[in-house]
Image (cartoon, rainbow, N blue to C red; front, side):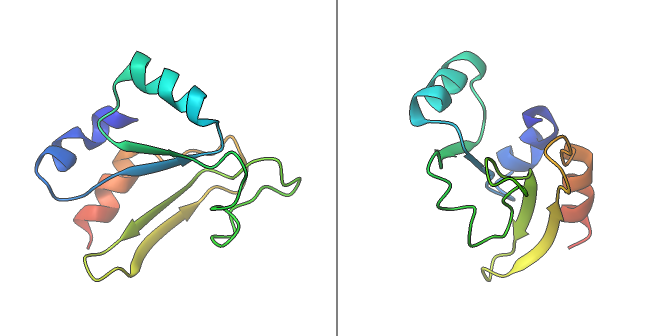
Length: 100
């Protein structure tokens, strides 16, 4: 995932933040192993996903969802995965960014 965003992130055009239902410990291990070029936040209590309405039907996890929030702080684009296995691709996000 991260390789598709690297040029845009390095250009300072966007900041990518990932919110994960994993624990802070699990995220720390991921960061140590993969060195992502984006910020990762833990939401193991599922508190952040509620207001964004991205909980799965069984409420055990969040559906993968991507938001683009513009410089004014408004949501400019959303791709809400209908199921857990759906993932927004980096090319979809780059296309959406280019369309803004």
